Amino acid sequence: MRYADGGGLTIEGRSRREQVRLQAAEMFEQDTDAKEIASSLRVSTKSVYQWRRAWQSGGAPALASKGVGGNPCKLDEEQVAQLRAALEAGPAAYGWELDQRWTLARVAVLIERLSGVCYTLRGVSFLLHRLGFSPQVPVHRALERDEDAVAEWRSATWAKGRGKRR
Image 1 (spheres, rainbow, N blue to C red):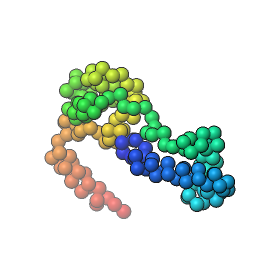
Image 2 (image 1 turned 30 degrees about the horizontal axis):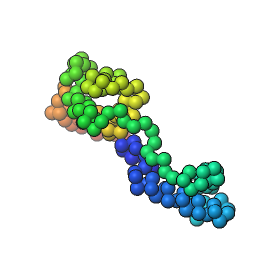
Image 3 (image 1 turned 90 degrees about the vertical axis):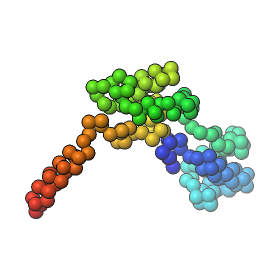
Image 4 (image 1 turned 135 degrees about the vertical axis):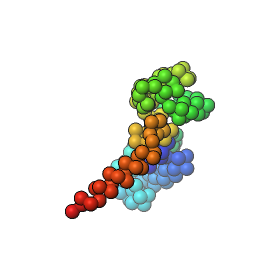
C-alpha cells in the first residue's frame, strides 16, 4: 500500500509484514508445505518460496525488515520547509515572471539556489510527490485569475448550453 508521502508502508506496516515472514520461518522449520503456509498466512505461494530461499541461506534474520526503501531525502526538514514556502511564493518571486508555472527544471534550479543540493528532474518529481504536489495539483492559482469574471462566464455559458440539450 502506498501513502501520499510516497514512503511505502508505515513503520507499523513493515513490522506486521516482518511478523508474517517470521511466522513463515517457524513453519519452514517444521517443513510445512509452501501452499499450506501461503493459505495459513494469507500470502501468495510465490512470496513463500522467496522467503524460504532467503531463510535457507540466512535463517530467520534474512527475513527481517530492511527498513524504508529508496534513497534518503537529500534535504533536511528545515530545507524542505524552505522549499515549500518558496513554491507557495510562486515562480515570479524567484525571477520567472513571464510564465507563472513551476516546471521540474525550475524547481531543480530553485532547490540548488536555496540549499546548494543538486537534484535530477526525476528526483525533483519524487520529492514533489512526497511533499504532496503533483502536475494535477498546482501550488497556487494563477495570479491573473479573476473569480468574478469566471463566475459570470460560467453562468452565461452554461445557461446557453442548458437550452440546447436534447
